[in-house]
Image 1 (cartoon, rainbow, N blue to C red):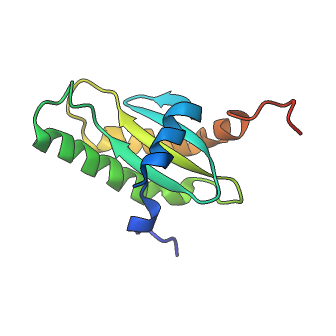
Image 2 (image 1 turned 180 degrees about the vertical axis):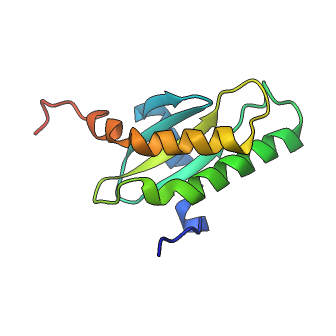
Length: 126
């Protein structure tokens, strides 16, 4: 039976990991989400909603809650293996999403996930 928990150990908390994502990370847009990712020994995630677009904290919190739930329920669809990633999910939509929009985005991400293996590693380095 798949593990549908999202533990604190799976969340990115360190400033150095965020800096690594922003400096070396590749990105992919799966509307209404943008995913920044970089290779890492363990899979860890973070979720962000821009304050510039959503001024009210309760709106940002709701969107973050929906994104966490979408990831938690669909993370078992992502391939498991030695190559795990740091991933930052950024909400780029302009209006409050519904649960079905977020769930559909995470399912689409799981289907398109092999794009990660081809990003961030030049083929010259072997």
